[in-house]
Structures are given as C-alpha cells and as structure tokens.
Image 1 (cartoon, rainbow, N blue to C red):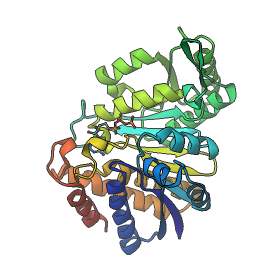
Image 2 (image 1 turned 30 degrees about the vertical axis):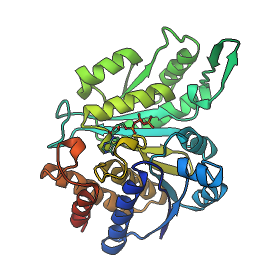
Image 3 (image 1 turned 90 degrees about the horizontal axis):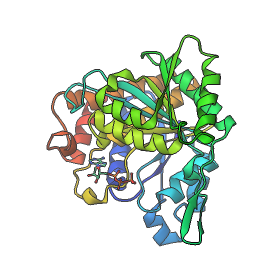
Length: 338
Ligand code: ATP
C-alpha cells in the first residue's frame, strides 16, 4: 500500500484532483497496486483559512507519505511549491514533451524531456530594493549544476531516445553564473561518452523548439529558463492541458501539472485533467523505480495508454480541439484502465 498525499489546490485544482482521485480509485479496484490518498490543503484557499499558504499539518502529512501529488495553486504558488522544492530537496524538475497521434503538435516526431534545475537561480526569492532600483540575486552553484547535469545524462541513458543532452544557458551574457553552469555540464559529460552533448543559448533554444523541435532529446537548464522553455515545449506538442511534471529528489518526489491554476476556466468543467493524470502516471514510474516494484510501471503504462488511447479516438477536451467535459473525459480514461 502506497500512501499518497494530494494537495487539491486552487482554480481548476479541485476539479483536476477529483479526476485523479477517480483514476486512483480505478487503480485500486482494477489493478494490482494499492494506494491510500490523503487530501491536503495548500495555496490561496489555505492561506485565507489558516493564515498559511503551506499549513504545518500539510507539510507533516506530505513527509509521512510515499509521494505527493500537487494540483496547481494560485497567487501563493511561490509560497507552496518553491518552499516544498527547497524543504524536500526536490532538485530535478522533469518535464516531458512528446507528440502523440491526433494531438495538435507542431510535428509528429517530437520526443524530448526538459530537466530543469529546481533549487537555485532567480527563484530563491533573494530580492531587495536599493533606492529606486530593485535587485534580484541569481545563484548558481557548482554542486547543484553538477547534480542536475548527472540527472540529465542518466535520463538520456535510460530513455529510448536520441541519447543526447543539450545544455541550455546564456553564458555569453551571464559569464559567471551561466559560465559555471555550462562548465559543470561539460565536466559531467566526460563521464558519459555514449551520450552526445551540445550547448545552446536560451534564445536559440526558444527558436529551435518551434523550428526544429524533433532535434531535442534531453535539455538540461537552469530554473527560470527551464520554467519558460517547458511551457513553450508543452504548447509545441499540444498545450498545457497535456503537460505533466515531476519534482524529484534523492528520497522523495512530488508530481504536478506544468500549468497554473487557470482561474479563467475554473469551475466550468472544461479543464483538461490529462496534465494531472499524466503527472500521476509519472508518480507510478517513480514509485516503481524507487521500490523496485514492476507493478507500478504496469500501472503507469496503463494510465498513459488510456489517456492517449481516448485522445487518438477523438475523445478530447476543448483545449485540444474536442468538446468533452472534465468529468466525461475522466470517465473515458477510467473505462480504459483494465
Ligand atoms: P502560472 O503563472 O501559475 O503558471 P498562468 O496564469 O500563466 O499561471 P495558467 O494557469 O498556467 O496560466 O494557464 C494559462 C492558460 O492555459 C489558462 O488561462 C487556460 O486557459 C489554459 N490552461 C491551463 N491549464 C489548462 C488545462 N488543464 N486545461 C485547459 N486549459 C488550460
């Protein structure tokens, strides 16, 4: 029995969480893996209710669980996810982008994963005012850069892809910080002679994601660039509604959609739950790897096949060109989990 903590979030978060709970119930009922889900509060609603965006009880429950699923939260996102990433040392943010049949992707043969450093860069919140100038500190360390580079090369080894890592930065302008990141990746690359390695400036990468997205296999990059490029990559293969993410550390992991709380469509039953359902699929892969539990890999595969199977048949939500509601789409996914 795996204990799963679930932050239900804000905006479309509760609707997506309901979908994921139904998928997990189907896993419990029909497949060989048992999970126990604990629903938790964090985000704007929790802040209003308890005075804390990340209440202590939520953090305690997360720490007691085997893995955490997190729906998007609103304005207080930085006080929830950025804090969780740091407290739990979830240093690798993994964001796959793959084209699938009947999805509005730019090209048919896109299959990449963005490995984003998750603990440093401009996201540490070190900002201050100096008179009428505001300053943000960008920290990049050798140890964090090498750690994420290793993760990227290991990912390239394990994937059935082009066996290539592209290090993305802007070292021609940020000579110190991105210079260090680039050198660290080059150093680690020497330990992986079977994986090809190249480097690209972030502006060129943003362009090539549109022009030649099939070029990429594994992209390794810093926190802010990774955040921006992964939103772009998700659009290249069909949109944010299909984009899952994993935040991985050595001991624990948290899984969440790439997108935010999307208040504009909240409560309307039009949100695409795939982003969160596919994040759940990534959770089962991670549980399988961590616990050497093959049945978790089987569950992950069944969830993925169910989602893309119905999309292939034209059962889609509005954002990807269909007319199914969140719950209708979820029901179709569940009916394919056998
Ligand atoms: P954040 O800055 O927190 O990432 P944001 O305000 O940039 O959030 P998102 O909430 O990520 O924006 O969403 C951007 C738009 O994408 C939304 O307005 C919504 O229309 C669309 N969108 C995001 N997620 C989904 C989804 N799961 N299903 C359908 N549409 C979505």
